[in-house]
Length: 296
Image (cartoon, rainbow, N blue to C red):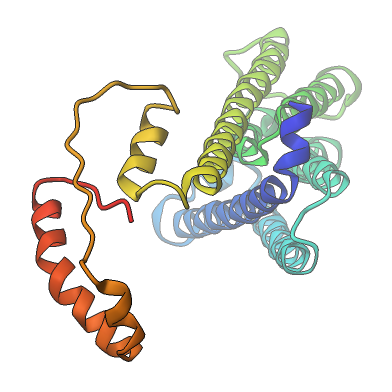
């Protein structure tokens, strides 16, 4: 793997930068859909959900949080675009810090609702599902460590919120939940496992990209080696057979024009080319019709 990263470093770094850009675009799109869904439910559908989660005040707070988050991702998108254009890469440190900030945003929202609003219900709210969304999208990092880190951070932060809400916040409003406290900690285990699974998928995608580079590099090497010596058809066969020797019956025609040298010495280049085309044109057409090869 070390040899590959040395050979294909510039190309793969560009691929990672492009993937990071697409990942940020996807997150912006998904959160815009969530923003529209929340507002549609509040203004046109059912206000029971809003009432369940603390009324209009909490609704406006969540909408404001979504707005800030979307603006943050838009800024990150511009930064990545600049890095792609200027340096053709996105540094690993930047991606780690960005991952930490992203996964912490839903945690901050839930912790605020539990600590400031004393509403334990938010631990079991749809906000929790944002962790899984970030874990799934982390595959586009093309890095096992970042995907695993996403799951690990989500599990750790969620565990802290669960413990604080159930054990330390004595003013938290109780609510009837079908799930005991320990069941929420089991969710943390699922988050870690999801991060590992996403990391495995990212690693496999990364491996296939390397394999694609290997194939392209081998094809380029063969083209340089044989391109000037054999026809395109022979070169294609060499690539398809991976350079293996193959015995095959063939008919060879050697054709020369009598007295061509004296003719070439007394005529212009255009006349010589026209003369050759008139002779070889029909012959080459017949050879091509029978899948033959013109070597020179």
